[in-house]
Length: 322
Ligand code: PEP
Ligand code: MG
Image (cartoon, rainbow, N blue to C red):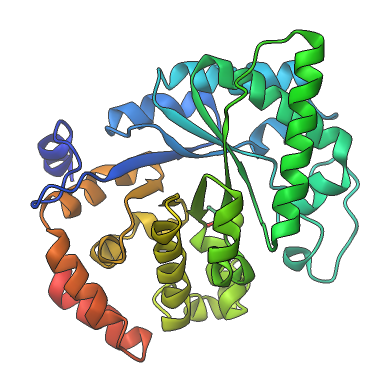
C-alpha cells in the first residue's frame, strides 16, 4: 500500500490509451483538504455539508455557513468543489430541528424534501454557497432528487437567492453550475429527462443501491442483499452515464462504489470519467486506471451487461480485472 502510494502519487490519472479521468474526494469540512492533496485528489466531487449543522443547538446563520464553505473553497486552491445542499433526515438528525418520528425515515422527510418545504432555511444555505463560490470553482448539488419538479423548484429558489444577493450588493458567482445526485431509481430511469435541467449528474450508489434493492443500508441483517453489482443497479448506473453522454452533461460518481477497485474497469467501460471518494482510496483507484485501457474496459462492460447474476459478474470481474 505504501509503495503503491509512492508510485502513483505523482502520475496523472490517465488510462494506458490516453483517457484522462478525474479523481476527486468526498469531504465534510475544510480540514479534510490536506488529505485530499496528500492523496493527489484534484478537487472535491462531494462536499457533505451536514457536519456544520450537527453537534450544536441552533441553525447556523448565513454568515457562519458562508465562512464554513468559503474556508473549504479557499483550501481547494482553485480546484473544483461541488457543495451539496443539506441532506438531513434518514439516519441524520439535528437536536434543534424537530424532525417528525417516521415509520420509514429513509423514505420520508429528508434532504431536498426538507429544503423545499423549509424555503427560508434553504435560501440561507443557497446564499451562503453562492457567496463562497466567488472564491473558487464551485458547483452546487441537490440531494435526493426524484422528479423534474424538485429540480425546477430548487432552481427557482436559487434564482431568488441570487436576486437577494444582487439587491444587497453582495459578491457571488452568478454562473454557478447546478447538478443533482442521482440516487433514487426514478431519477436514474428518467436521466434523459432530468439531464435537460442540470449541468451535471453525480451518481450516489449508497442510496441508489438501497432504494433499487429495497435494502436498508444500515441494517446488518440484510447487508448481503446490499449489492452494487446486482444487474438491476448496474443497468441504472449504465443508463445515467449513457444519458449524460447523449445530453452532453458531465457525469460523476460519489457513492462508495467509486472507491471499489472491483468496479473501476466496468465503470470506465460504461464511460464514467469522474470518480469521487474518500481521499485515502484515490491511489488504489488511480493505479487501476493507469494500468488499463478504455477498449478493454468497454469489452468488460459489454460482457458484464449480458450477465444474469451478481455472482457471475463479480467472479468475472475478479478474474479479469484484479
Ligand atoms: C450516496 O447516497 O451514494 C451518497 C454519496 O450520499 P450519502 O452517502 O451522503 O447519502
Ligand atoms: Mg445519498
